[in-house]
Length: 66
Image 1 (spheres, rainbow, N blue to C red):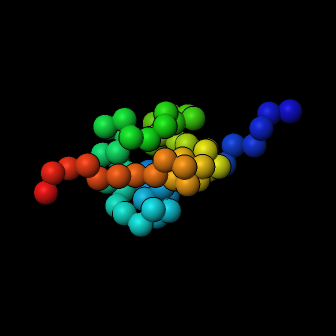
Image 2 (cartoon, rainbow, N blue to C red):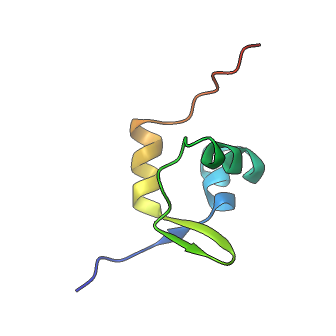
């Protein structure tokens, strides 16, 4: 039996952390997100539980100079 896959997109991740889809796409582009579980024509998809664990343990930081 395969483990259950609960997909989330860039937009859903953005909702989870309170930012825009564009900002999450930037995190992905800069390697600040784990690799997506699947990539479809509509875009990358991550497993919900993996993203929740990532947010809880690593999170997102903005290291730009201000």
